[in-house]
Length: 220
Image (cartoon, rainbow, N blue to C red; front, top):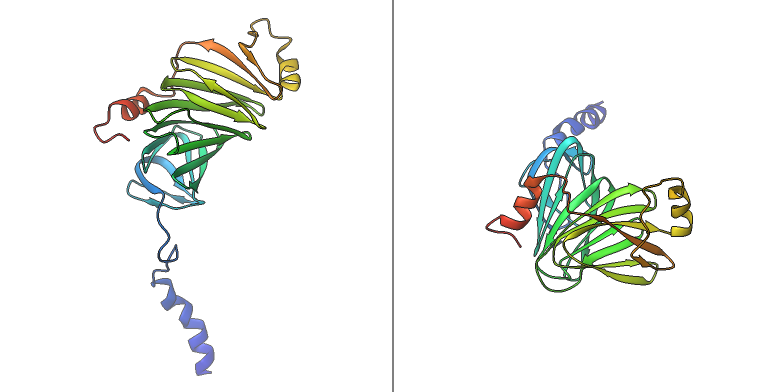
């Protein structure tokens, strides 16, 4: 009888004992510095949360989240989600929904994976860019500062600063859907696996994100 009582009451005592979330010695990727209507894995997140390899960050409609890593800054607007992974000298952000703005001081500090495409700074100079999902095979990339290296299925192209671009992946499939659209712009660069179309000036998800990426006194 005493054993049964102990077995029933033990879980209640264990509820109050904090359990370790990461094995000792695993280095963090960075920290959440701003958060509103945002989630860290399955839980609500606030500023100060430590982020590790494999953690997912996401935002609700109207939410925002800012992550600071080594030499990089990542901003998520509303309805966006990423999973972060460790790289040898930086962080990879696997974008699954919505979009993001990133700022990087080194080419190796930040890499974006979206729709099987890789986007990273082209050189070790200050780089600020935005990556947004348009459709299952379409991305919009806006480059505010620096240049980007875009890679998809072993093909690579540099994307210059100062403009917004539409990227069509597997273009023979994607362009067919645009053929009925009179505003479809011919690509400025063609590859077998993707086309790059210029769509004009710079448009950002929010000026707050741009201000943080460009003007913050402790920016990367």
